[in-house]
Length: 97
Image (cartoon, rainbow, N blue to C red; front, top):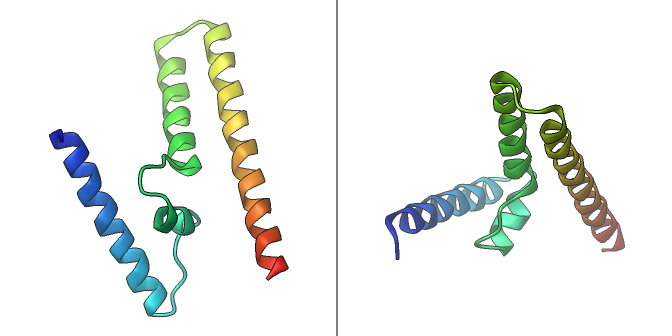
């Protein structure tokens, strides 16, 4: 196992423990908490969106072509839509209970 993967696994375990402690104390956790508890190696919509937005900032500063920036913006919109669909599914599942 690579050092990077080991570090990611350690961070994941720490994050999972923090979430469980918050839930045990009756506190609310982040929007991705349910996913973090259920899926170990998933890249979350919020983290992906943040990375893509950072990439857009970088591309704007470095003078990338408009067509390249537009393509990345479309990816950003797609991620936002997927996130909305996931949130709607969570709400629907919650209401079904």
